[in-house]
Length: 463
Ligand code: F0G
Image (cartoon, rainbow, N blue to C red; front, top):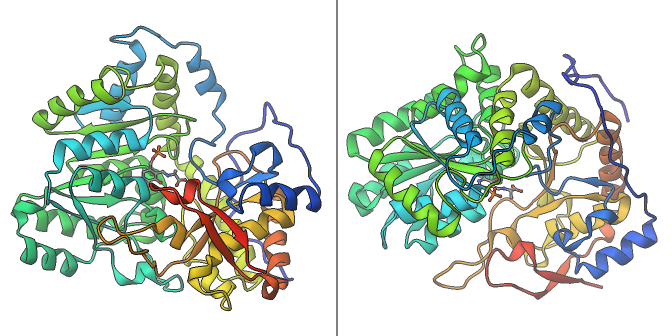
């Protein structure tokens, strides 16, 4: 296998002060652990995992400054100093007026959906995300995907596969009427599409169209700095703009946002809702008391809000984001050189292996991505996750399985956690499994939970 070095160094703008020791396991131990976990990587014990690529959510390494901030926790029930620090940072960095903290992203999604959605409403979005869509449905809404077709094609080279197809939105407006659409839900570096960005040009066109109709735009700003990096790299006119200014420009095109701070913002727990409309804010800050906690802590400790405020500032540094995505691209380029089918262009938070092309002999009903994730773990102790038919779940009304076009295994890279040598181990393991791919037969689901089944479903091997 020939390796060509990537052109620009992405070396990390930090050094290591503390390490976490890992247990090394044998293939026999891993085979046993995987069977005991029902071939679902979510059910593995973390101590049995060597390199954990299950998610980039809550798995970042905090900086010395964030840890120091934890010591400044003001654990008052009401009016914590850390809340006001967080509020100021969100206002300055993202530009929204009001901030409501929540324990994590889905806490914000729950409240925002209850505030903004009425029964029978239609919520267009640039591809679904599992928890986001479920909260929209629980609030009485129906989600409609309006992302461009290229997003559903893992080999399309479109530079902004997170873009919205305005024709699809117009068709929804014609069918249902603008009054049935409270907002368009826009995700940055679209998770389920493989971490693919939306362009500012597309967002501005969407803004111009929706403003005429009185439809709001709510941003899922979970990985916004990563999206800004792709805009800086790919969108004409942004090469000399800072990540921080691009982030602000994205937010300026929207009316509010939900945030899982466990990703971009480099904390292990936390989230928030940010809004500009005073009435929406009033209702949200009232409802948050029911589900999360008082509107100045929203289910978080003061120290968590302090770490988040500091993490947001670190997340919009150009040097940080260049190294973060540089590492992801380093891994992705190795896989491409080995001929592994992955979602292209390489996305922001991980590498997505196309299980349909990796295992063309395994039909989607036998869960090819789930089976591949299990084999990767057994091969090397690398834990990945399924993003395909298991994640897509069933239609809430008809009970039918959704059959997503994309059947992916996600190798999500935690921020500031693993080294370049770890990336090499991952690539070698994927190559190993690729060589023996014909032996993988697929899985049968033997237990299916009612909500978000991918977290807890259990499987057995097809012999
Ligand atoms: N929106 C996006 C785009 C996400 O990726 C997530 C979480 C959420 C919302 C929900 O936030 O977990 O803090 O409640 N994604 C994680 C993942 C779970 O692994 O991709 P949360």
